Image (cartoon, rainbow, N blue to C red; front, side, top):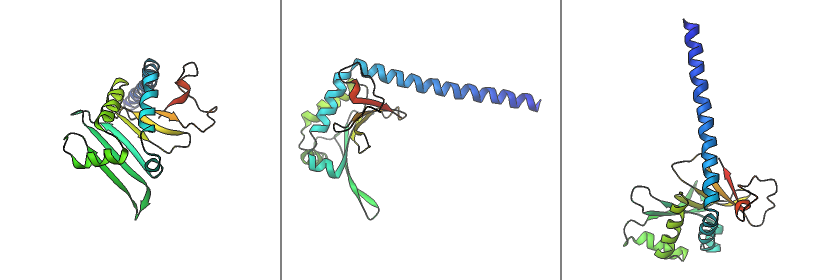
Length: 183
């Protein structure tokens, strides 16, 4: 009886592991399809976000733009790349209140206005993502994802790298060779 229970438990665990693998592959297939249907929009939101951050600010900080699912407000987070006394200086503000002084200050530091915030938010929503951020990965400079699926994200290739060894979303589309899906 004990041996039979062990076999049954093993079969259940095997089934669970297989379903996890299927779920992951389905997520990647959905992400590829989502990209293919919205490739130009991925390119546009990446360029709008990346090119609108002042170069000096981008060199010294990471910038994150996140849409809150609850109330459709926006968080903008600027995190220093330098670690001082074991911590990074972080500035964060939310757009929920139009009179939010911190949010307006971050917009001013970025050289942005509410129109730019709305444009980035609308594009992210159309590509079914809620976060875009600058990163300093070896080959990538921008990461786009939906926080409800933290298993995978879209990564934008840096302009100045040789990316022949990197698996891109597609070599057949105008923008597919500029992005990769990563977990």
